[in-house]
Length: 186
Length: 289
Image 1 (cartoon, rainbow over the protein chains, first blue to last red):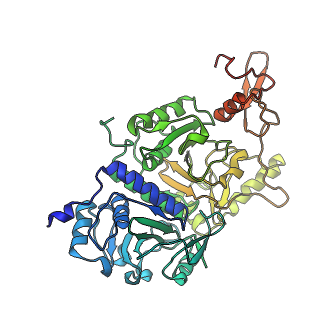
Image 2 (cartoon, rainbow over the protein chains, first blue to last red):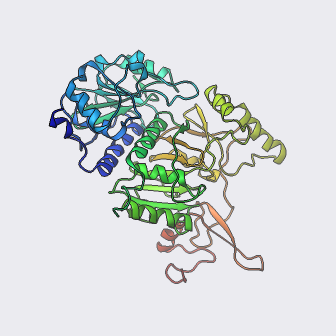
Image 3 (cartoon, one colour):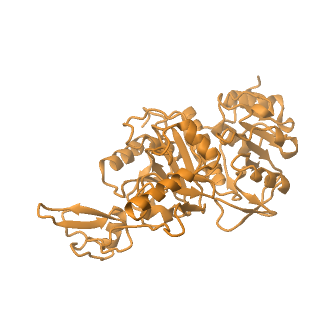
């Protein structure tokens, strides 16, 4: 194991994680709004934002799916050392991370009618993130918001499943936004 | 304070609670099970709210705790001091200065901003529990959106009392899907559940977390011919003369003397500082309190 994988975690875990979680939570509560998140320096291609999300939410209790775009030995070692999250196939994952095109959307758990919370949260790495493009409406949004989404149709299909469905966190550099299953995308 | 981890709970517990909060926000009104921990206070004292607060607080936050609207009751003071000690956060009694507010059974009178978080202490999170004791059954009812029983209960209120007699913990439907218990807030507060701030609900003994994101549709259940009506004592506050706030009734002597005062102590004090004086009030600063 190279020394590099041992670095890049939170410097002050409880404090950095609390700030990171506030950003993730506010993003999930206000779909479309973009927040900055810091504290992690993971190895490429993981972005600092997705690294911070992993450090904040993942541990040995959260099976993680690593998409091909991010499945490098360094990334695996870094995630294992800092979180201990086991790597699993898509259908068993609580969290998934990767580029949009490498995430097999239909394979992930969408929850059950009695436990819709038993669904995967996908951390989608984006080249850029901006308040342009698709229009978002729904809980957490005052009137409407805009967010650069990879593919509108996928999110419309996902919202159809409500209360089941997937929840998304988009990351780019040190910025993130979120899109829960409740958001209606046009 | 270095004897405890920041905000008391260990990091793995906080991650577990944080994941539950995120799923709660993604499915508004749905009760997410979580592995509630024992806290250094008894069940019924807000262990659910305290665990949610511990998972949410950052060192930069300003924390306020109210119990039935009051900042100065034992429950509120002890929880406020708990996080002052274990998280080192600033504390306040002013609603406008707080970034995180933990509440037992009230929503502050002053409208919350979009940068504020309201954490509720919840005793019984399941709105159907007193109608159907089995968790297996109530979970099935939620999954099938089978809420007829709740309407029967409200109908029986009308047939017995001529009116919907439910005055607190009045059931609501969130975003047209889940029927939710807003915790035992008076139904006067129900219209405020549609707000700009993030609302998180924690039930420690029952091990459930749920949430309402900002600007989410929250409808109090009712009938076309018996519409929902928020109620309060038909009186003005005797200390600050407010007519728009929820009032507590106090018996003040052995001769049946009574006094109505705002249940929200910060709202009342703010009004009194502005010079409002109620029927039995004295100018702010001239009383013993």
